[in-house]
Image (cartoon, rainbow, N blue to C red):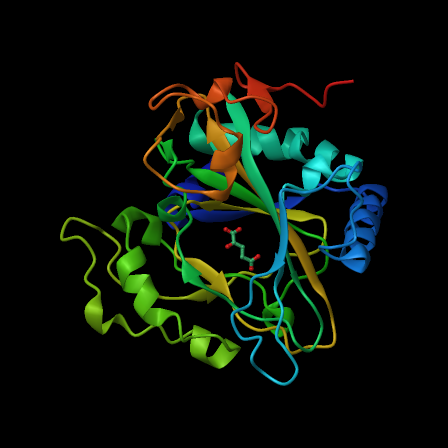
Length: 291
Ligand SMILES: O=C(O)CCC(=O)C(=O)O
């Protein structure tokens, strides 16, 4: 359970470190499943074994001699029992329910982001909600769980406090996509940006947000965030789990990787979207992983 002061902190900043939630055994099981999958690689799955929805290097800098990599695996929970247990983790689910004030939650999708030692690429400044145009109202809060200590050295996330209050600013953030290294990352050039006149937060102050292995960090889907290169000799393994509230509805006009699994009509509730979007919380209580 999050405390009232943690919930206040989240509403002030648009992010919160929710503290340690995983035991060493849980952490080791997650690392072992992820490492097995990374070793296998995107082409190593046989036809009849469970597979994630997507597995790719999302770094755009593979023209470099030593190619930079950010390995992204979407819905690893569908291919790994340890990660399937994680999407139902009561501390995560209860935390999301408290921060969204939503009694019912489903999984939207999960997303491993693995930055290998020495040549881990950047995840550029962005907001999540504008990248998810097939659900409305947008999914308000995600959980990000560190499987290694993530700090400034190995490419922890950076966030801008209060930025979720400024609405959809993706057009502006696309002008900052050249920022990739740690020194660059803190220097968002705000020339083309003005916060809404009625916003009490005016200043763009990027902050590194270190997260220890086994801890969960929550962020709002409109919070400005991203993570620079990993030039250290340490890996940075982490997973984001994006949840939907019971109010989420399907928007048929949008495009997204997960749309291939939705057979609903426009405007129908995502709660009825089926097995790729499991229900994890009902009436404010985590349901636990089905037997
Ligand atoms: O893992 C990262 O560095 C970025 C993750 C992210 O963008 C997210 O969880 O929304």
